Image (cartoon, rainbow, N blue to C red):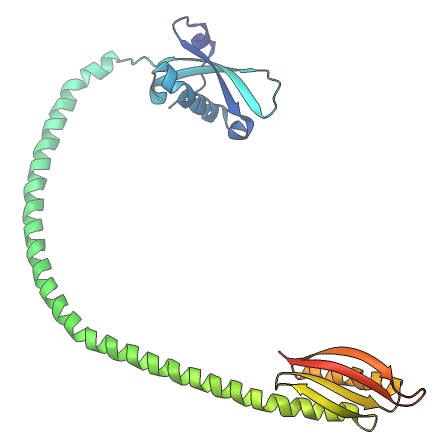
Length: 250
């Protein structure tokens, strides 16, 4: 594990030294040991010391660019220390290793026997699986065909419902227009198709024409139609007025 070391690394004249520049966003929020690890990886290609074996110390260096952090880094290879106690444990460890080797051999033989048995079982199960697959394949095809038939029926029902709604939409909007006009106005023309039409009507007065358009807008919106009102033109001063609008079904 790489840690931030004391100044002894900095004082070591044989330590590799290098100034490292890193983006501020890279180092912000890093703990000291995490920053030391990052710096060790940065200098590894130049020092030749693997980051995992590095003892590293660093000192921040003031810089003029706030987006960049500068560090003076000293790194040296960590020294291995074999204690006398570790040497005394060498023989018991060798004995233990030999014992583990014997156990590994026994386990290998046992595992080989189990593997051979498992291979025979797998071969038997594969034959059974092939027979099951042969049985399941027609059943799967039948289920797929049933699902396809069900989907076609649902699509046909949906299409019938949409067709019925389309058939009633025109009749409904004609009833709405008639109710809106009442005794205040009469239609002169209806241009367009079933779901998009332009209406031209004549009202007894300009005020009556405006009332017809307001009533028509409210009722048509509830029926799923959008209305765009046109101009109201007075045909005879103080008498009849012509109005226009466009209706489009959503």
